[in-house]
Image (cartoon, rainbow, N blue to C red):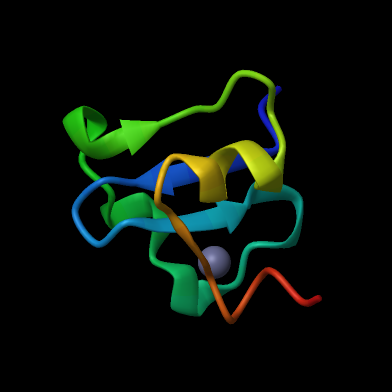
Length: 58
Ligand SMILES: [Zn+2]
């Protein structure tokens, strides 16, 4: 199972294991979903995604 999910519609990346209601991951359309290889936050940021403030704390 993937750890991180990017939403191309708003360029936010979510941590699936920590996702909150506010993330609205169920609203993300299939075509807008982006998984990362490797499955890391670093890779997501390299691809221009912003960490979600609800599920990613650093
Ligand atoms: Zn989130």
